[in-house]
Image: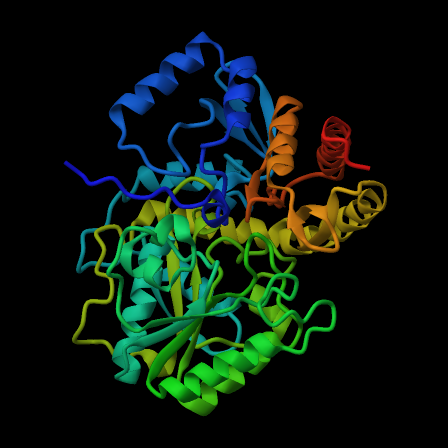
Length: 461
């Protein structure tokens, strides 16, 4: 028998997404899940181990194309979630063609061998990477790539400690949750990896330093304080931009980079969900004019088709020749690499980072107008097509409108818009970078109506 464990507060569990414990979910399902979907959902619940964030499942999909997904009832939704794999949209013809062609020639590359698609993808990533990131390792997923980065940092520095942020997410494996800062992944799992120190994230609205609008970068100074006091930190690891989203101040990463250099720590930037054009530049680090010692990519690298991630590192970190950092079975999978090459071609040829920057600015302007008329909107934020609307019950106290945020989410689903809620009250909007102006207008129209509807229902004026 497994002993009963205390159930933590929902406030602590909602940073990465809804945890399927809300009556709002049941109410929505009662009106939208038909017999066919219900049958599949029940079988899913019967055969899979249950876990937070994915059990019970929300619905059943039968299609995904472009910026949209289709459920088993034939209803289409603009997908402003997509697990951040759909930078080039779902089922992009060029990605599918590349995969088909590769399947006809070489479908798998046995370990200890290499293949042209893997070598070419590594070369292409080095060409576009910021600064002197000139070495690559592939992995079948972002969590695995994070694990490789942690191992390499320990080997290269001879140190074992890491500094990372509370509320961060770097994957769900034991090493990744050790540096991660989300309760839903960490609670009841320990002991975790030793030497993992956590600091407040660069969120001036909710950080303990209470900077408010006049951010003084105390959170960056705190990192240097920890580096100085610990004295033997291998690396600082952080999400360049948290995909909730939280947008760090302009000088934040420069200050952290300088602190790492002073104290002999490496800087690892996790861009698994936000790299490859989502923020309006190919890499989010370019917004901050910094070059990390290692940069981790994933999710969208496989074109929304194949799981694929990459660790990019400086030449000086090529020091682990006697240790297996990853050595994964599908490390140089030619089909995944073919999808990755097609993805890079599409990002370049269709100028998707530039499109994300322009469409994101247009969306932010519309969201600011929405904030002027909706008292429930406490803040809007974004960079490129990484967008967020924070809902607050009280702008003065910053009380989170958690139930209202879920109500908006399910009202939007009913009208054909899919997104997730993070931190319990932030409507997080991450559409395909192929999204059109008209599709963005439709999505924001739905949000405008749904927020107004929830305000009226809850007497918020």
